[in-house]
Length: 145
Image 1 (cartoon, one colour):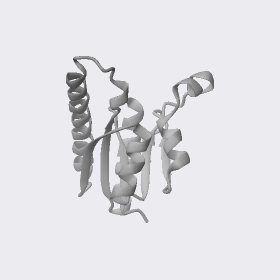
Image 2 (cartoon, one colour):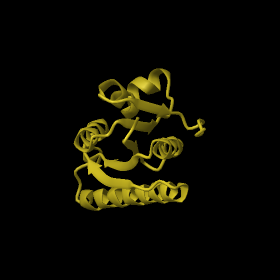
Image 3 (cartoon, helix red, strand yellow):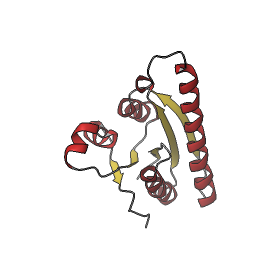
Image 4 (cartoon, one colour):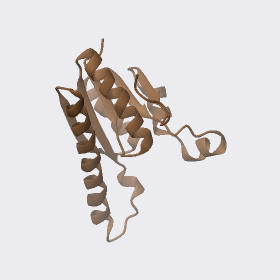
């Protein structure tokens, strides 16, 4: 049913919950697991240290991806592809989906409600609304079956 499963990660608890589900789907459907981390360059103020900050964010992304790849390998996922991408997070994720032919996205959600949701926005919510493929939104309290 699914050949390519994408799980974006930022190393948060919400992302970790989604990783469990993504690994489960990759195993169940013998799919390639794609793991991405998005560096939002626009969130870094233009200061003399901006290059160093971006470098640190990219390294954090590589570290988060490596942790997911290890978990997937330990669980028996045969094929894992990964990338650190940049741009507005929802746009970068959707571009990756299109470029790689991903047919399922599994994302964590913080489950914000009320004013926080409107003020902070939600990358997951934007991906759900704009993606042409199914998106599984996983709350941190959820665990893989």
